[in-house]
Image (tube, rainbow, N blue to C red):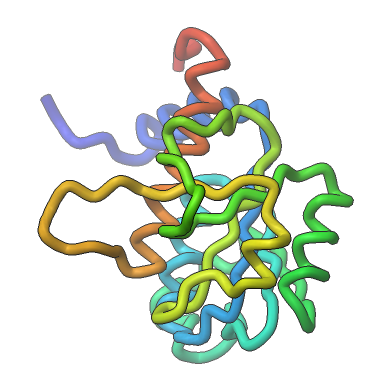
Length: 181
């Protein structure tokens, strides 16, 4: 057993990229901490997110502090800024995305129970307040990440990474067997 490097690593990642039958985007609803935005960008780039819809007071991926955690990965996705979350959600919907909020809200369902094998735009909210009321109203569905430990919530960047992975996992599970590398 050995760690993959160089060509082997590229081949492995290419194998999984070929299984992406659906598109994935993120909508940030007033995510103000640039370090969180940078971390979200890095995870998003790693999991094939194609676009960031930035709403309200969300920090720019180009901000110096966001760049510090993104490590230049913002070059792999595009972004657009909207004054309101409703405008951003409407733009995502008009681009063909099912808009799914990630929030501990009633009547949210566990993310794994939502049918995410389609073009999805995940909505993530402010670090302290979550998705705004207007943001929740703009969602087609709302899911949450079940937590079994003694902490009741996750950092928004960690939640984004887990949610993006769940969307991709569902995409991959509909794609059948892993093609040979």
